[in-house]
Length: 61
Image 1 (spheres, rainbow, N blue to C red):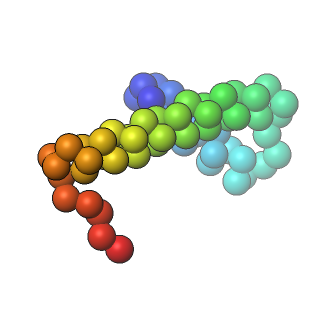
Image 2: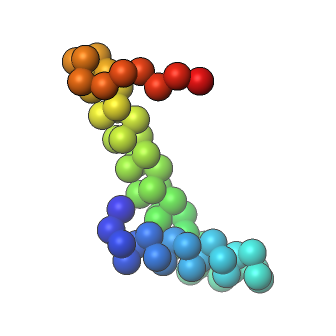
């Protein structure tokens, strides 16, 4: 996620806590959340692959 997208996501989440957001803001928030979630998935997949290759130790609970 780009820095500008991250900042806008934070801004929209803050606005959402303060008041009801508009449908345009809601659509933008949903789009940014999808980008954020895709980034998290890629990070998880990369971590999994690095553990498989023995580059990192598994995360412990």
